[in-house]
Length: 139
Image (tube, rainbow, N blue to C red; front, side, top):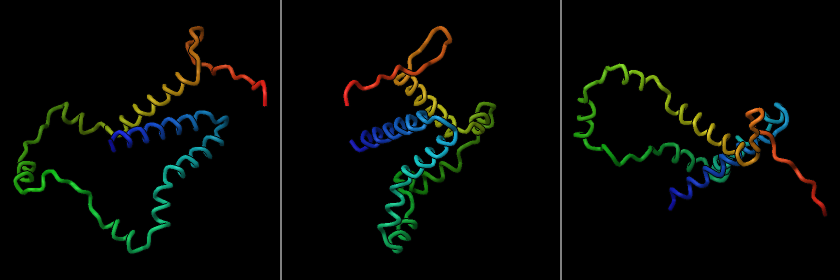
């Protein structure tokens, strides 16, 4: 349940952020909006730093990441004695920045989703154009 809620929160934040940045008119507005989006994304850390005391913050900084797997010496020994694969594909795998590739793939996914929901496809120029806007009839 928690993982699903976190995923939905992450997905909605990414969609709204991409929409927020794609709807800007000029480069200067895009820069200002990206700074504003960064401020919103760091709001939880700002709230934590403001509402907690210095002692609690220092205690939280001293906490280490919890890792239940491989805590025994046998697991560490087997990890150390693992033979090194020096093949071509193993070296390529070490040189590829997988986090960057995942970020680019997710960014492309959300930009594509923005274009499919907010724009119409034209076969004449093989490009998207914005959907027509309608003025409200009443106020």
